[in-house]
Length: 424
Image (tube, rainbow, N blue to C red; front, side, top):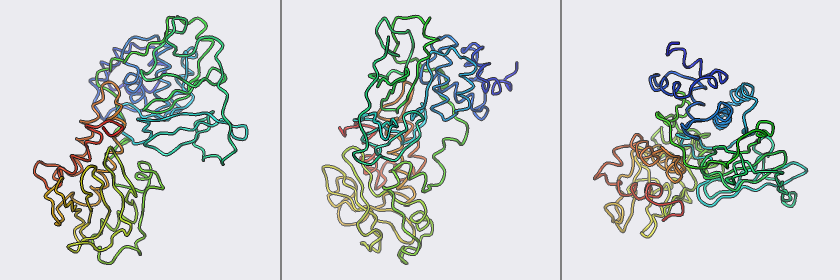
């Protein structure tokens, strides 16, 4: 078999489960970055989550099924289950950050909870976290649901498993590997469980037939040894370098936290066309926070400011004077005034902060997008390095040593590169 056949092989889970994983891994190392499809994504994601340790084809099928579900490849997941009916557990649905993907949602770092309710006879799952809006799901399917009306829900009574719990470390439970942070599940009827950690929520279901003869000894929750090469994604499918769009900002900040200004309401003084387009189509975050720093739009967005500039908003920089943010109406350049000089030259003059409003939003978005990977990385992830590299690609000049606003961005970025989820 030649290397060009490898992508086709990986796209067929039945063939993957018959092959030696180490051999596939070695051949993948020689495959060009641009070659591959869904199968390569799923295989590398499964090993990124669970590690490269040996596993039976049946258990590896559970890993593949989880990875395919997390990545949204439901058809591939169905093919995995059909190829290996003896997989010990399967993923019913998942809302999860894949390894190597830096999406802002879900970001369940810090204080979080997952609670099951019933509303009109339908079981619902409510996920609450510091860094994302309360989110409700249909427990059976994972479909997002609007929050039920008040006084229409009642707590769901947890089911007590008849026998060992899935992924219990007790010697009487089955010897299975699971992600290192899966602890204290919510048991449901039918052998299902809700697991949640900083990376997301998953509902999994045990296969009683397969587990009837499964070895016991307790689950293995040790941190996995990452496979060489790490996760791979199809080119262009997880690219944050494209244009800012309304959907993109809504996904990062939440629809209710993004402000767009109709073109007719933009001041005539604002002549910089890209800035006008950004404000009308993509928008600006109404509020942004990380660590001890926050940003809020001005009450009168684009009102006249000093030096012929237009007001954008204000940073609360934590433990020092606020910083006022302005945009130049003709060039689109963004500046800051921070009188006490704790970050920047100080005084009443406005100094350059970043090239334009597009880059300004990308910096704020980048912090939000990379929070999870910086605070709660998977083994093998280098979230801080990836974040700083991505921000340098936005506007390296604004971050260069000696740049007027470099200390400001260093302060803001430290909220995820140096400080913890609680801001210290």
